[in-house]
Image (tube, rainbow, N blue to C red; front, side, top):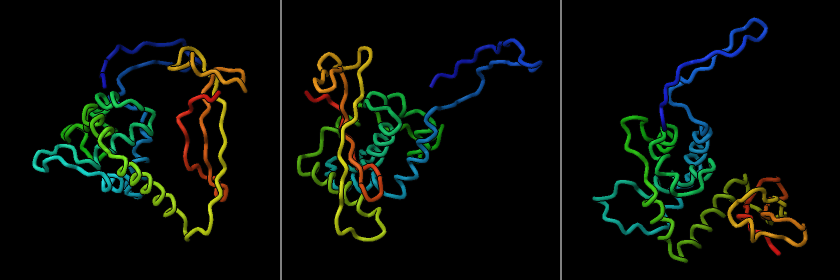
Length: 205
């Protein structure tokens, strides 16, 4: 976060009301919603449950960032639109992300960095990945007030036309839509209308 201090300047008055622009708001963020997401994670225990099915072979006496905290930081960053692990190199010092992960703004230890995140993203075995999927299914089923006899899913794609020079845009031509596009798959629970899953959106020919 950069704390630039620029001199205020005035705009023309509007209905005799003075309009002034200033840049002394202090430390502000556009990711305030991450605190709500963090509360949802605390209630669901999602990061803790995911971490419990991944083997942590590190020496406990040398661990600075416990696995649940690493997963929590990564999950919250992705949920706020920061999809690249590199983003954690900046977000790890961001006050609102530190608060969301249970750290104090100034005196609390910074969150994990990109190398730490990248190591864990490549660490789980196939068996552990299947266990991670099972955790997500269990969390979803636990959200219902009573056990389900059956589940009906509505699966459909959504046309998302590529504009400009997005990554892979030259290879994402879809003959059916006659467009260069992403085509994410959305899955909804028909009983409640709640979203269940979404694909990354690669175009299909």
